[in-house]
Image (tube, rainbow, N blue to C red; front, side):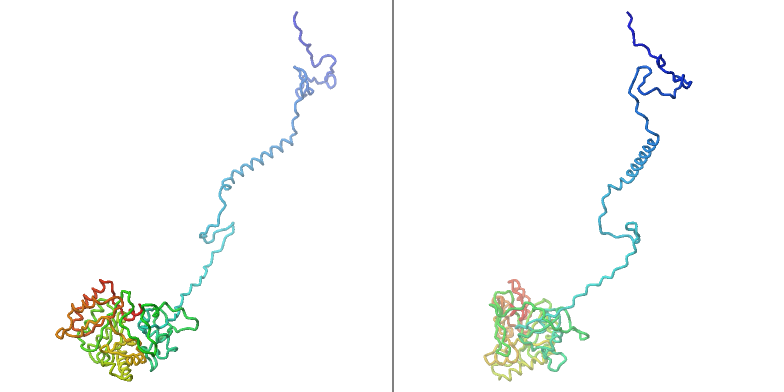
Length: 430
């Protein structure tokens, strides 16, 4: 038996009211008239479709989308700048007229920087010790003896170069001098000591330490020395000028040419009245860095045969004659003629201002000719090298018969043994 399907319904089946009967229009022929919700003309009833939003809502959505698109474009344009590190305050030049934060800056004006003033030289205080002279102090501090005299003339009137009582050789142990290292006094606006605490004095040799030569007592007996501190590598070559003068100039020239330091003891008479003596002392004057000087009396008498007044006259007469030639004093060193001294000599010499009576521990006897049993050049060299040691004072003469011949090998031999010739002041300083 054939199957039967559901009965076919027609939307205009009986029981339905035809709209055409009401307004004369056929709904099946009017496409704009939608069927009722849930009506399926073929399959039956279905859920009603979602209603369409109003037109104004669609316009709003489109506007929002447009705003979002604009925002995305703006982010895309600004994104490269977001990855850059924040600027740091790095020092560096800013071009003139450049803008900072969009605001033009004014061209900076040059700034005046006050220069640092150059420090002015400062006076320092120096305590005079045994063996000092204005020249030795001046050499040590790279100035001149006259400068030191000018700077101290108020405290010590005898150092005033412009006074009649000027006596640059009168330098007392214990005096405290003020000076400017590396500065030379200029009489046109020269620096003068200013009030205030002086700079502490530099270290000076301590005569009280073991081995050092004791300082002479000012105004007391002269101190007799025959050598300096032992245990050093220093020796003092000393040359007397009192008799024969040839070859005094050649001896001095050799010492200068070879840079050999020595101490010269001239007599006033030979040093000022004889041409060779004056020429030799002129070399001494021109080389204060090499030579110390001492007093060997006026005309070489034995001081043990003189009164105190006569001894004082011998010393002062020689000093007065030699000072203009040497440019410095012979104090504080005295070499007694013939090496003769006693207590009276020490007293008189010390009171006159010569604090050291300088003897020796090596005597070359070079003043005696070989015809009279004197030494040859080889004898002089051998005696010195065999007997000299640290601190030795060697006695020779500018007019020695073979002294000039002996000097080259003698000095070379000393240096080969580690001994260096120095001035008497350097020897006593230890």
